[in-house]
Image (cartoon, rainbow, N blue to C red; front, side, top):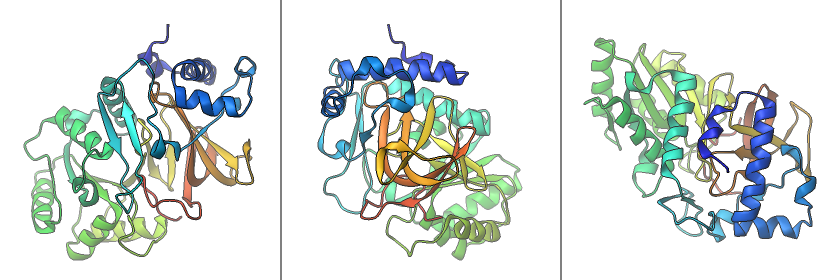
Length: 326
């Protein structure tokens, strides 16, 4: 019997492969949308023995189909941001507990005990809509620390400046989650030296400003805040896992997540390491939706379960977390 929490015990490539194949077969049997897609490819599932052979569902299916295990009803759903209200993706969540566990496990890998931090959120485009997976994630982290200073700041930069200034003087450990364009606006109006604060940027520009490269963004933020502790988070509505970048714009996956780079001219072939192509994502936490997703992001495999995001394919939506041109 498939046990969802075995996902967080993966400790080797062999263990990942074994569980990925098990989840693939489970989803083929129990996810009607995924099964129809796989059947259209005329594949013999019994001949799939390696995760690189597994077919990846185009991410656009989340806009037009309810992708969920046939045995479950959703406990909640997340909806993509996008720049219009039409045709947004929805991710139906059958097991809220596994998402909560994924949030804490991933965070702890990179930043340690989540209960030690004060969390501030500068996430206007996400706060202004419902069913954001990013807001859910930050809310869950706030609940772990239960600090009175935890809070969101919509457009009130002055209040954010005052609380950051006070917490810096008190030597408190702070994490500021910020959407990229809002961080730039805040940095230009309220430059401040941040020695004890970690900034995690996410969300891209959301069509609000002229796109800049990730290097330009980080350079501006580091100068304005006088800190090197400016990191990035990569995820999206259709994923229940998060990758984080702590240096050089290189994201690292948790052990239950993997990135494969497909050939843009042949979606069933993969390119060599350090070559750019379309990003396919395996997220085993998506056990009750779809763990194998073909995205519209362009990236590179950097080895050791690390990757870079280079941008978006032409005519794709402006959406997801941490989508800046590199």
